[in-house]
Image 1 (cartoon, rainbow, N blue to C red):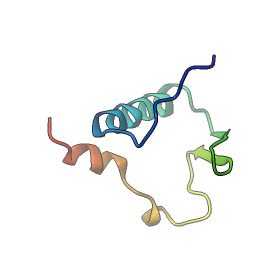
Image 2: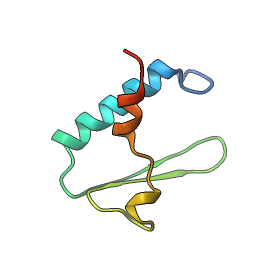
Image 3: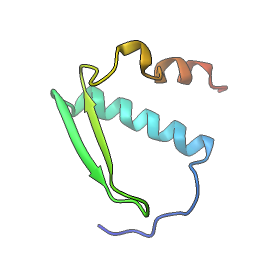
Image 4: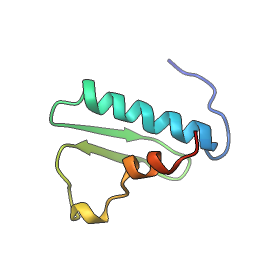
Length: 73
């Protein structure tokens, strides 16, 4: 599936959708971990989604649940 990618940063609404989809994926699809690689115009980006923090303490991670709670309805 190859779609034209919109240019530029995500809008606030797009980022909210992204976080909501990531929550749903994590809740229903993720077993232990998921490793992804995306090519960008700069270099590949490596994404590690897991049930345990990797390479940093949990306090170093951005809390997306707190971010969502702070968003206006």
